[in-house]
Image (cartoon, rainbow, N blue to C red; front, side, top):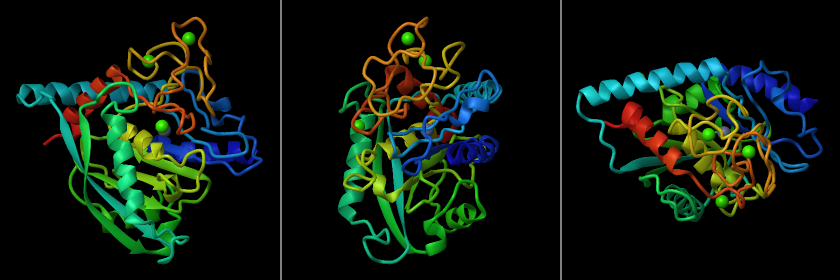
Length: 314
Ligand SMILES: [Ca+2]
Ligand SMILES: [Ca+2]
Ligand SMILES: [Ca+2]
Ligand SMILES: [Zn+2]
């Protein structure tokens, strides 16, 4: 029951902060026990997991929290349109990668430039529709890599004092700049991200497990899609299983409703039999293994473009 306790406490933190988590679970944990089993109706929650392996913890938002976020995005978009700067064509996102190290060895988190470059390629291919799905119009330009030895930051946890310290020291750029922190995050986490806000969140950005980068050791989450998934949240995407089978779900029309996260790569899974379509297990915003997730939909692309215009564009 470690998992459930873990999931619950992380969710409690995350809901307040509006962050999404990707949690890895220790081998042998009861990964089938979704953190959301004791959630209020209307919210869905769960862990991204492989048997005996890693998991994502979404600390899902409640229906009420989602509704508030939707109202806010609508208002922001309307305000931008009034000012005449609401036309999205494409966006190149300046990206700063911060490598946090325990020490200067490879085992201490000193990832080679080659892994970071490979991660940028994975991210760009994903958002360009090069692996399947839609071209979202987003590209990511690596403008800087920082490297910091700091054993305290190395095991940063979500919404902690350490996270605030680390980000106030390292964060660069404005709302348009994607800061990616790469560390040896503990607690079995793969990563987490913060949704965009009208006023830039000092915690804005994406934190990922260093070994989830391409060529890392976090198999089967070692192909770089943790950064892709978290960048989706950074651009206001929910999980495909947000809200479960009924109601507005993830607020994207062309992703089939899904009752709970998919683990592994369960072809043909259909957890909402009364709703059209099989579960979107190949979507970047599900919890499938990296090799299984390879697409954003046109609806998700539109939602991210709206979010860019509303919150992140100049
Ligand atoms: Ca949907
Ligand atoms: Ca269905
Ligand atoms: Ca993939
Ligand atoms: Zn997530």
